[in-house]
Image 1 (spheres, rainbow, N blue to C red):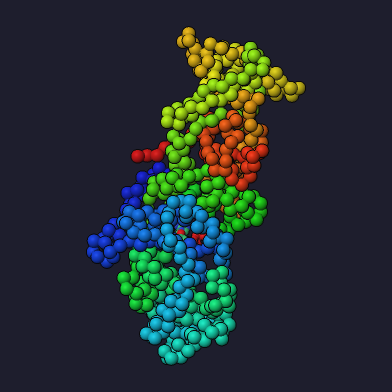
Image 2: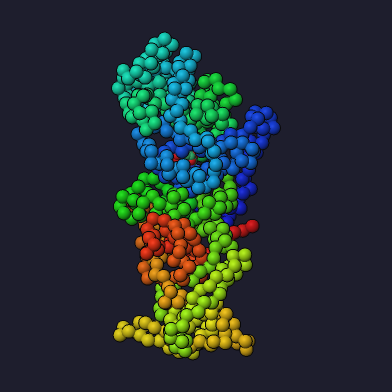
Amino acid sequence: MEEKMPAAEAAEKETVSKNFIEQEIEKDLAEGVYDHVQTRFPPEPNGYLHIGHAKSILLNYGLAKKYGGKFNLRFDDTNPTKEKVEFVESIKADVQWLGADYEDRLFFASDYFEQMYECAVLLIKKGKAFVCDLTADQIREYRGDFKTPGKESPYRNRSVEENLRLFEEMREGKYQDGEKVLRAKIDMASPNINMRDPVIYRVAHMSHHNTGDKWCIYPMYDFAHPIEDAIEHITHSICTLEFEDHRPLYDWVVRECEFENPPRQIEFAKLYLTNVVTGKRYIKKLVEDGIVDGWDDPRLVSIAALRRRGYTPESIRMFVDLVGVAKANSSVDYALLEYCIREDLKLKKARMMAVLDPVKLVIDNYPEDEMEDVEVPNNLENPELGTRKVPFGRELYIEREDFMEVPPKKYFRMFPGNEVRLMGAYFATCTGCEKDENGNVTVVHCTYDPATKGGSSADGRKVKGTIHWVAAKTAVKVECRLYENIVDEEKGKLNEDGSLNLNPNSLTVLTDCYVEPELGKAKAYDSYQFMRNGYFCADCKDSRPDHLVFNRIVSLKSSFKLQK
Ligand code: ATP
Ligand code: MG
């Protein structure tokens, strides 16, 4: 069952059991069951990939790499109803972006239809498969349940010759959808319902994105998947827990189809995250209702959305490593993902000046038309990033919250009479403000001390507050989008009617932000720290040269601490 645990605990607990798949692989190699490792990621091209798929991709790729093996990308496109070519392209891009290199091994299950057909014929010849005329409802009824054994189909004892003829006729299009199926002949009394003569082929008069109208019979997943793995010489077929009960059937198929060195299936727990939506059904509705602006809306956790928001492949790899591989389903705290992106960007990105909620600051004793450059370090924690010049002048923008006419206790920013440091520039003492008729502050005034250039005084005078700023004359106006989780699990993910309980504050759009000129050059996916405001990434969809849009990836601080 799914249960919730804090991220740090999850990270710690799951690291312990992290290597159970590796242990199995090492055992297989030691015992000579396999002499190599071959893994695959087998998506169905019926939607965009999400963070859970990222885990599967990186796990499979990582295992291949660790054991000097190979990793395949294979589209499991055996179900022509739901598949779209559009998804094939997006999935390829996502897998590549994550750094899981499948080299020239891009495969499509539909390329194996002929071999699958031959496997079915082999089963018929061995008396291990039969054509059945029962309807879908009858098959379900005959199947029984956990308490009741199944009943054998009256068509179960057809001769090999008759089965071969009927199966060929199915292929030739003699039958309507649902009129006949091919079933494996296993055991109607098996305690495992998957083994009760499962359907392995069905008639479906449908066009397929790859094979067109060549086929009107299609293999079922439980039959097709093991064959796909076997054809590609996969050694370890890693999948999620819901397939555990299907493993005996997987083994039956590769054995009865007489593959040499058959692959083995190993299951692990799906990755779930708190406060996010991953179900395709829900996301589709959010897109259709215009609540999000597509599958890559930065509030979602599709890989495209994470990339757009500003997450890096490194941060996702770190996240997946910290979560580890588990045998029991659990939800990981979204905060762990945020921790990973902060860690990744911390030393890599320059810390820039950007004012999100601006109010003007006028330095009354600074010469009217003068501008100067001040030199600031790009990242105090990483001197390797060097320094840059930021223009400074008489009129600046500062954050509205950095001025208060009547300050509360322990407020060290601008208030009349108080001296602060304008980051990287000078000390400045607030002298007052101007207000409009409603009492809103419109301009803050101050004077500066020219002897404090660089932000320190020769006389050893100290200030308690340092605030960031952007020179008005050279400022670039941009839009910033701030995000919160789209659902709040604490308050309940779903409403009583089953709809999503949406967080009304999941998106805040700030249209009048001012940034230093350097940020005006940002290209799609460029990311920075905006001092005191968080990490931001230039939006790839809505940014134009004359109207830049920045997404906040994550704020700077969190209550989350990784327990080591
Ligand atoms: P969804 O139900 O979210 O659409 P899916 O299982 O239908 O996912 P597939 O394309 O069939 O998506 O899955 C491709 C691979 O990704 C499978 O091996 C599947 O087990 C794995 N996978 C899917 N969801 C997760 C998850 N949340 N965590 C880890 N692996 C996952
Ligand atoms: Mg699926």
